Image (cartoon, rainbow, N blue to C red; front, top):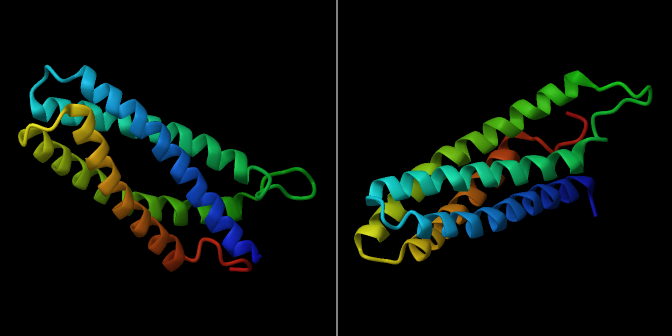
Length: 150
C-alpha cells in the first residue's frame, strides 16, 4: 500500500478514536446538564466534546507521527514539520468551524424538539462528524499534506 494511503488511514483512525471518546463523554455531559437551558446545555456539551476530541486526537496523532520529523542525526526537521502543521491545521480548522456550527445548531434544535439530552448530543455529533470527516479529508487532499516529496 502506498505511504500516502497509510497516512490517510492513520489520520482517519485518530479522528475516529477521538470521535468515539468524545461522543460517549459528551452524551454523559449533556444528560448531566439536562436541567440547564437548552442553549447552555448545547454550549457546555460542545465544550466537553471539543476538549475530549482534541485531547484524544492530538495524543494519537503525535504518537503516530513523532518519528516522521526526525532526521538521522536525531534532530527535528523543523522545516517539514512547520509545513505539514500549517496544512494540517488549515484542513482541520475549516472542518472544525463547520463542525462546531452544525453541531451546536443541530443539538439545540433537537433539544427544543424534546429529545433526551444524551440522544440529542449523539445525533447532533454524529451528523456533524460525518460532515467534518468529509471536509477534513477534502482539505488534506487539496492541501497535499500527504504528497511525499512536496
